Length: 363
Image 1 (cartoon, rainbow, N blue to C red):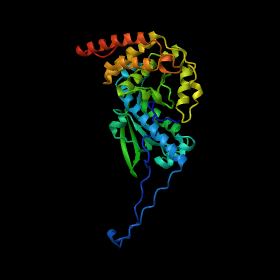
Image 2: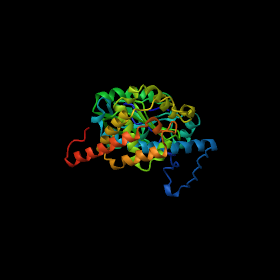
Image 3: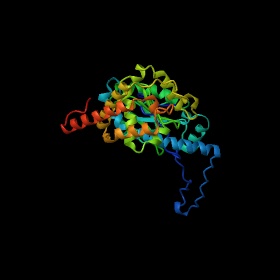
Image 4: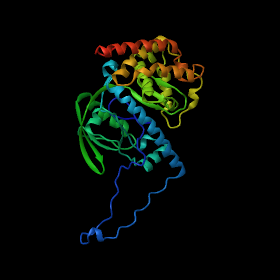
């Protein structure tokens, strides 16, 4: 699926709102010589019904959008509040994602157009809370017209071409002037650039209970999202993946290409689930590397305002419900649970001591 946002490939999202129309409706024409109240008001024409196939596609998009929206919301404070800990992986970004009808293949293209009002112009599909885009007032559904005085492309290659416009602007400006269309009116916004961890956050379109980090992206599957009981638990997974990326563990284990292929596959609307048979070719993470990621992730969680007290219980529950014998599950790829739990307990105590002493939350 096509991603955008002319910054770093950070936090893409599927369209967030079903039945969001890019074009407003026009009221009946009134004669200048007849008062409006005296005119006969024609009955509005009913909207064309969606075919069963298109309705099913629209329903799928809606459900995936809800899951991606949750990932996006949970990721926001982790990405924005931890630029310092992400070090060389910190990037300048605006903090929004956008798509058009061509971002969706086949029947989903038609569903995006008919049910979501998407056309050739790129439309904002998500805004990262706390980002410059959010502070500037950019909204989901805004149509992207221009940035930095340059018109933004439309059509089938709009995402790629828009990235070429945004990239230089984000790297060289503290603020970017944008022109957007909203409710048939043009709005001018000044969007501050935000420094944040430059990792993509992806939804895995599969029911296996797993999460992946390839050095550039963090992916959490639909099955894993459904396993989590609250946003704190989802944040534990998100922060852990971010930490693995910061520490370069996928490359260390020579897993980056394998995991990257799995992520690319699971981002599709119709993924090839045969790639999930067995281990999927992923080498299990050594317990020492997992413990190092747990340590860094707990600091990230605390800095982002998440409750770290439940981390031990979550990982323990995950290992009990989906043990290492469940192939292509999370614990099969991260089997050192006992070692990890000890590292988690130690780090939680360390963080609380620093919080009590009002010391910086850095490992």
